[in-house]
Length: 358
Length: 165
Image 1 (cartoon, helix red, strand yellow):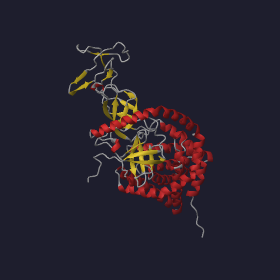
Image 2: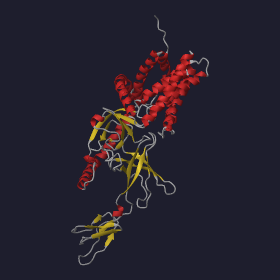
Image 3: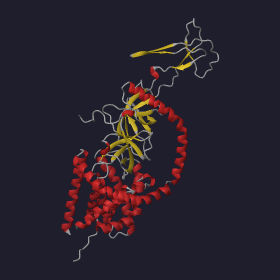
Image 4: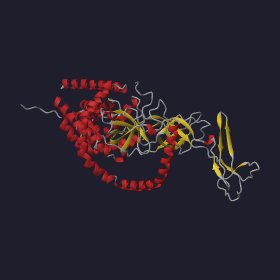
């Protein structure tokens, strides 16, 4: 009895020490641990697959009992949403194509030029303290650690572990997730509609700001050619020449450079499934102005970032101002619904700094 | 002696597969029930501190190998949970079934708190938040309900059998 107790005590000490050594090794990305995981995965997957098949009727019954009404409600809501978005999608697709053409013309990187692998979600995290999903594509498909993962709406996370035929995706909501992003602040609300007022060809016509809502009935027999020149210190003046319009008052919006969207970079961090992710390190500069709720958040890109630029992440849900010179913290409403993921797209993108030397 | 640990590993493989499939799907109030933790706690409550800790360390190691968190964290957390279960039941001379069930529920709650605590010690913080209360309550209730079945399985798995010649 005493001998058995002593053996157990020794076994416990040995296992605790082993656990500590394993934690240390794994935190340093030891290849031995990766190998161990891989071997265990090979043994465990067939058992898991069998259990999944056996228990599927039980989980189906569970979802049938507890989720049926939710699914019906969601279905109605989604139908309405689809109807609302059908028109907007066509317009947006055209805009995206135009933007990509412009980027390509200027030699700038676009998402269209990056290869992607489609994958299906085959499992969620079994613990309550990890926000990950497992997908059915791995290193065989060219997936590497760090690659960004999207669904139809936008960014959902990044690859954190890769096996031969499967990978683990860390979701944006995981507290360990961090990625550099851009906050695209909307221009200030001042209206700058520049209108060509009635004038005679012989008389120089002043450029008069007009209320965009005002009627143009009073304007007749006008020459409507004008030049708007905007000069900003440190910036090349922009000259916009408007074509002649035969008659009437034309109201043409010419955005000033100062009114174009301003971008600032920050870092998005997850905070668990029950709280919205936040963005830190946004510089509260005068140029950037007040951050408005609803402005979009997109990935920043760059040679150090794991993600290419301009992937939609979400929009600002709340701005938490801080005292002193510290910039605000932004709470982000994600565009992707992370609670119901099924098909994902892994962008086979690696920043220049991560690419192996030829 | 060796056979019961071999049995434990085989049973834990099945329990682990249930954890990653069925109990990952059925999430009452958005929380996954923790059957691996349940097995460890039951082992501790029936067989004492040493067996509970050993079961926790082995189960945790197996659990870690399928998670993306560092290997060894689950071992430490579940090992602690198994030992706590053994310690708690030590105070009752001959625990009745309901005392054991309550002890299992209480230690399951503690075991679920150990995991984010251990994560925090290696810098993986951010999980100690208000949601933990809900997680702990749901896990405790689920484990309380599943404990009768787990006790039967655990007794069968870890009992020492005398070989007859």
